[in-house]
Image (cartoon, rainbow, N blue to C red; front, side, top):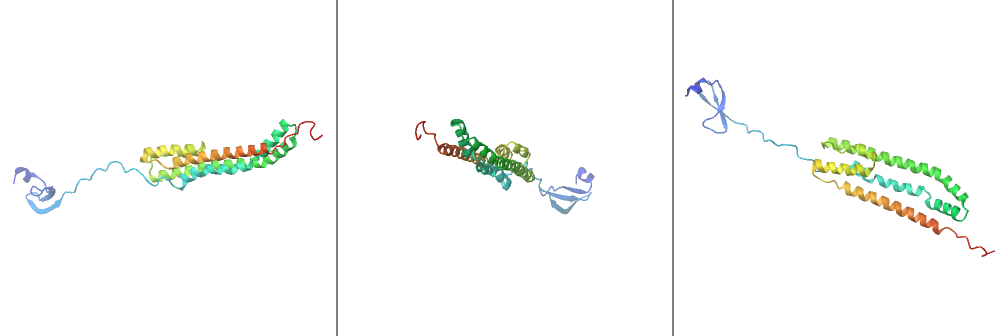
Length: 213
């Protein structure tokens, strides 16, 4: 027994006969009691990024909210107004028709505006619910829901960029949202064009003077 061993206090020490284990030193001699040394904890680094489950019902509702704007198109008698204005300015008639069309536009305009406010509010509401869910999932600093006040597309684009940075995965909601907006714009243009064309075709031209007199 060495001088260093005899001076050591009682306790567990690395076993000189069994690597990876410890043996009890009673202060004067080695005992037969041994134990394995616990393996050191392996450093795992940062938590694994979230790669699934980020697209819930709320973000899909944000994507589809712009479709509600199509319900506003039939509320406005675009064709009737164009026809009345054209006849009033071109042929000097139809002022009564303009007044009648504008009279019917009053409640329709209010209803259309109310629907627009509802659509706007739903975008912000669904965006806020989506933001809260991302926070609960552990996504670090998700794109803030307040950007939904600008438009649904702004929120979806910003959200997709942040999700890509945080998780390394691009959400499919980005492309679908862009497609929805394009379809809504295209349908609105087509509806307006068809209404104006139908109004112009419905205008009865005034016959040349002298004919039918």
